[in-house]
Amino acid sequence: MKNAVGRDIPEYLLANGKEVYQGKNYMDGKYIQKASPRTRRYETPQESKLVDSIRTAMEQCGAKSGMTFSFHHHLRDGDFVVNQVMKVAIEEMGLEDITIAASSLGNAHDPIANYIEQGKVVGIQTSGIRGRMGEVVSAGKLKTPAIIRSHGGRPRAIEGGEVHIDIAFIAAPTSDCVGNCRGIGGKSNCGSMGYAMTDAKYADHVVVVTDCLVDFPNMPASVEAIDVDAVVVVDSIGNPKKIASAAARISQNPRDLMMAENVAKVIAATPWFKEGFSFQTGVGGPSLAANLFLEKYMDEQGIKMGWAIGGICGPMVELLKKGKVGKVIDVQDFDLDAVNSINQTPGHYEMSASQYANPANKGAFVNKLDFVVLAALEIDTGFNVNVLTGSDGVLRGAPGGHPDTAAGSKVCIIVTPLTRGRMATVCEHVVTVTTPGDCVDVLVTDYGIAVNPLRPDLIECLDKAGIPHVTIESLKEKAYSLVGRPDDLQWEDKVVAVLEARDGTILDVVRKIKPYTIPED
Amino acid sequence: MEILKPAMAGTLESSDAQVTVEPGNGKIQLSLQSSVMNQYGRQIRETVLETLERLEVQSAKVTVVDKGALDCTLKARVECAVFRSCGQSAANIPWGGAVR
Image (cartoon, rainbow over all chains, first blue to last red; front, side):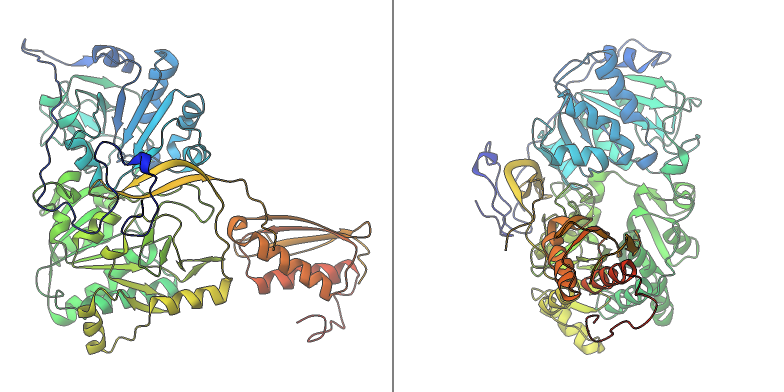
């Protein structure tokens, strides 16, 4: 069945009330029955929940084949915990048919690709999928299609019982002996632990894995001891150098800076650019640089930003310290400046992924967002964005908070160069739709700005401010005139990944890629 | 033109292509690798073959390792490799003629 973004979704995926994507805010006003975990009572007072190994913790939690284990990705490419736990589960305990439900997975998790090839890991539910894991899943080696969700879609699915977590593993930079966890104060700090919070509340069992045991009580706790079954101390939960970069640097690339300046111009031309406005930006070159130019316009007009959310990095903390933004609310940290600021700098707070972006709760932060600036691998003439699959059709990205912030915000700006090497970023049809075009408002490229025709109000704003803009079709034609018109990718029928819209409907599927043969003319 | 000795042009940098030509056995043998194979493999092959035809190369073993080069870059790398292989790349390039 074709969905609202024109993608053909196989009927067999539409079982158990699953629907195809119907458009923005389709689920508004419907009810969700929340799932509840079955948790163990620890009535006899315990001095400590420390156990001697991951294996002991798993045995205590009744780990067995067929279970779903959850992980969070604040340790990013430095994470050791997923691999350590899965090694124990599969190689030491001999478990099979395991599903991994992670907030995201990255290049650090290449070893999991072997367990997929061996048929021991049979399900993957994640936002990001990259590296070898992306390759083996794209090659059709995972038993069930991977399920890709946004950062807001994940807590929705967990709370609604679409994902039932048997054991949640919490990678904790610090924990006390009963499992109060924080993302700071240890040797592998990550700052916010926002993605782990829903897991801890909805999993049947929760195991904390830490490399820095601190005195009780470890407060204020991101994950609370009341939800934790066992605490394991390991040598290291991650490589600090890969957890947070030293500092996100503002790009010096003149092309990035030109685009960033145009992003700021567009923002300043809208009626929402006023005292107390709210803002989120990605950490890509031009997205991050937009901070710099925005500050200039704020100073000129004598206004301050009310609050900022998101993955947070140094330049935003800098604005907070300068008093140019009132509050920063943080679900994940990208650099050490942000890690060292959360809950330390006044006004820098932590939030859960549900609070950040869940479309099925009673109002996430993204719903009050004025502006979001995001990147894209591809954007098509319907303003649909792909941030998941490469130009060869292989899984190598993550929707992250992209679809959530795009849908919630008043103005969603995509900033991307028109071409990357020979790839046309602005194209006729994106490989995979990860953010639907009805949520995307403005496209800023190095060859011009395009406004979604669904937003005549923004077109008027730009015209009034004298900001030139063109149609997205003309940008696509410009791109193709530079790099040539690409051939269509060649797919097999087999679906290797299902891309859920943030509301749980099916937005797109990724199929198995065919070995490439040059098409005959 | 006749390929007299192995010659190479271009690099493996992003947006470039490395083209190697070697004496052939009476026909064009093309081996192609590309970072954008799935979307542009057909067009890269066409561009390389057209360029060789324009240079009247009929016998050659040609290896292209493409890193997302535009057509203009591909043409330039093929032309340069061919002229180097005939020892004619130092002077008297037919600008605007066979090379354009």
